[in-house]
Length: 173
Image (cartoon, rainbow, N blue to C red; front, side, top):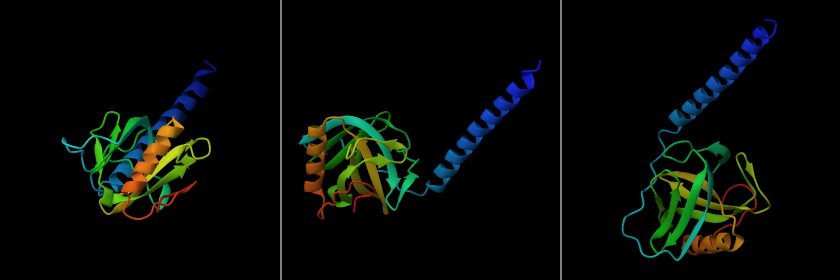
C-alpha cells in the first residue's frame, strides 16, 4: 500500500507528459497546415542516373533548422531512396508516396553533421535544400555508403539552377 501512491503519481506524470507531447505535435501540424503539398512523382520518368538507399532523417524549415516539417508525410524518420532522374529528384520515404522535386525547386545541396535530434559523424548527412511551394525547406538523408552519398550530391548539384553551397552545419543556400 505504501508504494501505491508514488506509483500512481509517477504514472500520472508520465501520462501528462505524453498528452502534452501529443498536443504539441497536433499544434505543430495545425500551424504547418498551410504548407504546400509536395509534388508527387510522375509515373513516366527517364531512367535514374543515381539511386541510393538510406534513411530519411527530417525536413526542416530552412530559416529554422530545429523546426521539423510535420505535415504531408514529412514528419517521421523512415527508410528512403533518393533517385536522380533527368526530370528531377525523386524521394521515396517509406510508407509515403514518392515526392518529386523539380530542378527549378532546388536551392542547393551539401553535407551536414546534425539535423534536429540526430547527430552523426562529420558530414554524415546529405542535405538537400528545396522549395516546398513558396517555403524554403531542407531535407536531411542518411546515406551510409560515402560513395553513394557523394554521387547523389554531385547529381543534385548538377541539376541545381544556381551554384550549390556546401555546408557542414545548418542550411543549404
